[in-house]
Image 1 (cartoon, rainbow, N blue to C red):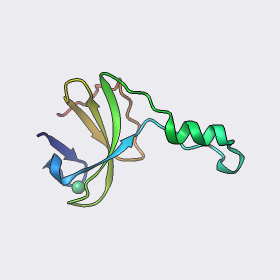
Image 2 (cartoon, rainbow, N blue to C red):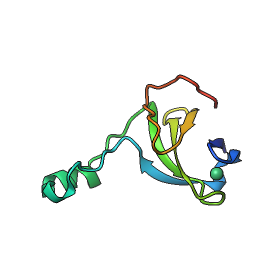
Image 3 (spheres, rainbow, N blue to C red):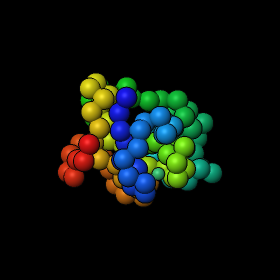
Length: 98
Ligand SMILES: [Zn+2]
C-alpha cells in the first residue's frame, strides 16, 4: 500500500489510481509514415527496468486526470509526480516528494 500525490488533489491512496503503463514511450512522430515494424516496437517492445521508472497513472477514483509518477520498480519507493506535459525522467530525483 502506498500514497500517490496527485498534482490536482494531493496525497491519495493508491487504490484510487489505475496504472497506465510506461510513460517513457514516444508515439511515432508521423503515424501515417510509420512502418509495421515501428508500430510493433511501439506497442509490444518494452524494457523491464529494475530501479527507477516513469509510469502513467490515472486518478480514476478521483479527478480522473492522468499523471506521470516516478517509481522504483525494485523497492516501490515513489519519486515525484508530474503533469502529462511536464518532463520527468527515471533519473530525475530533483523535487522528490514521496
Ligand atoms: Zn486527482
